[in-house]
Figure 1 (tube, rainbow, N blue to C red):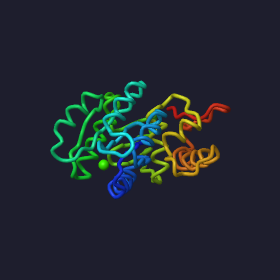
Figure 2 (cartoon, rainbow, N blue to C red; figure 1 turned 135 degrees about the horizontal axis):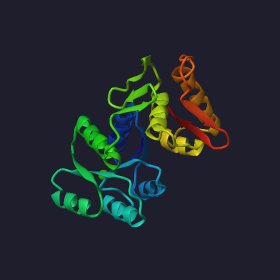
Figure 3 (cartoon, helix red, strand yellow; figure 1 turned 90 degrees about the vertical axis):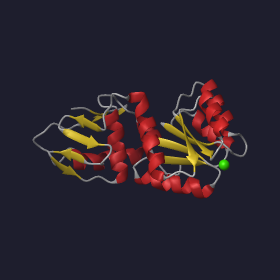
Length: 223
Ligand code: CA
């Protein structure tokens, strides 16, 4: 899951990125409303965390302009304490939820998880493909035995399993699994897929391989 945080206070932005990355989210940062709007307009994000008081373009204009462009990414607004009127107009302009500063990281995480589940309510916290299971809350991956994955391998596997049976191009994978700061080439995807196979498929020689290469198109996972 890839999240864009638009927040001009660098300290808050930095700690949000760090905390969310520890929870296996992929996080990009923007420090003003204009670049935040431009990035969000690309439509590659699964969630937007947006401060209201921003240089360049205020948060509410960012929300309403995104919705005008039919960008339906869920938006969590961060607002200074007591700006109740802002909250009301924030929700009216198309935001999905809001959080008052100062907030605890746990509270933010709970809202992020709730919003990220909203468009796909039927998808449970545990994904399964064949005999492989992935728990989104505990980060436990099992195929009879527990499989240890790096943070990036977990994010990649989660993305594949969220779309099991569907072919995902390298570009789609890059857009959802890596942030902008990462130096990602199509070859990087191949390397991570190979590593993932080494852990998820190769040890289980008596069972069908789950991760499939669709030559010229991309990859899919299927039981
Ligand atoms: Ca601000």
